[in-house]
Amino acid sequence: MLSVEQNDLITRIGPRTGAGALMRRYWQPAALVDELTGNRPVKPITLLGESLVLFKDDRGRYGLIDRSCPHRGTDLAYGRLEDGGLRCAFHGWLFDVEGKCLQTPAEPEGSNLCANIRQKAYPVVERSGILFAYMGPGAPPAFPHFDCFVAPDTHTFAFKGMIDCNWLQSLEVGIDPAHTSFLHRFFHDEDPADQYGKLFRDKSSDSDLPMTKIMREFPRPRIEVEQTSYGMRIATLRQISDANMHIRITNLMFPNAFIIPMSREMTITQWHVPIDDTKHYWYAIFTSFTKPVDKAHMRDQRLKLYQLPDYIPNKNKSNDYGFDPHEQEHETFTGMGADINVHDQWACESMGTIQDRTREHLGQQDKAITTYRRLLRQAIEDAKNGGRPLMVLDAQSAPSLTGPAAIDGIGPTGDWKGYYEKTDASKRKAASWANGG
Ligand code: FES
Ligand SMILES: [Fe+2]
Image (cartoon, rainbow, N blue to C red; front, top):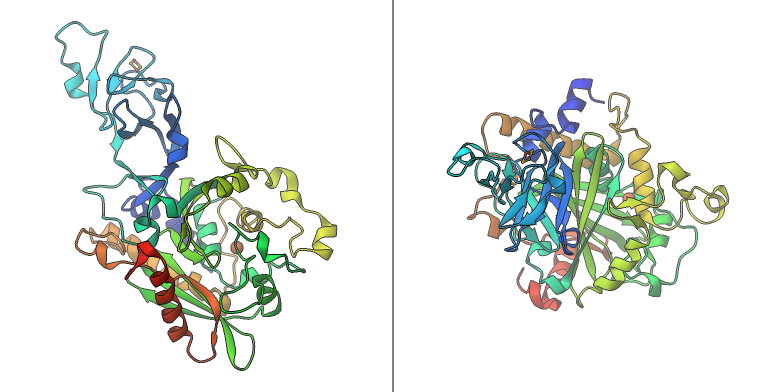
């Protein structure tokens, strides 16, 4: 249970808040590369509570600048993309990707008004299908050399979706390994041939047991949480017989992403990025360790479920997430269909826009959440005191952060560490791009 002040400290993300200052010390997903294509790559976005406009100039450079024109405050999202920048539609002032004012064309010839104008601007880089922005002070940190960033473009696919609540609720669902046996329970097992691109629907590695059966029949996992240089490693262990256990290794990439196995082929790296205090996007990079990702298939699967341009899920609060009591009785634990993202979304959103953590009661099953909140509070403190918070990497330290192992399989009771290390090593050996990773 937290106090109101403690809850505010770790949930609110405006520039002058504890968590907001911390989140600004990291590269954060701002948009999918797919959103900045076409004839006029200009898109208004709200990120960490700030109203911004993202654009790609006529030289192919990405810019992210304040949305309100510094002349008289009109909306730059309606601007003209030309002459090396974005031109305001009101009086034609032109801004480049660094926020520099290049022209004030209604001013007298020879005016140097431009020299005194600087629009707020944040750097943007492209990584694995996502445009990341850095909104913090000083030089941006280095990216870790994790799988999702070092895999070739052919082996990654990125997508996003909106969730109508505070970011921390979803992050905490992502590091809660017990809920899958309930929230994502299927009463019947599907044909695993239909598993491509889906989570918890494959067979587990090293066995013929469908994941749905393991989750359904072994609902009381042992959870071991280990602090690491990048955040946390979470081992979720389900004893399925005297000799064997189901071993699932997931990771928290501090501060707001997790890395989990999706299927025998792919892992998911998923960020939960605040739009403002009460809404956020999940951004995921799917990384394949076997064949190139079938991006068209992955995209089609997901485009059917979301309304663009805002990536709002078709099933949401306004239609009761498709809740069907008959289905809840006979097919799924939630009665909300087979898409587990809908289940997670319901869980997060139904806690309220910002969960009131003064009323919660955490148990043993929540130990990853407890550990994470401790790390978060420590990092907020470090940022406030001018220190270097966890995972604010420099160019020297970034290359040492590789992997991490995200594994799901059946191994021998008593040696889950040996099992996941061996399984991870053989997975990397088989993947051409991850050799020695
Ligand atoms: S308000 Fe933008 S140029 Fe005048
Ligand atoms: Fe879930």
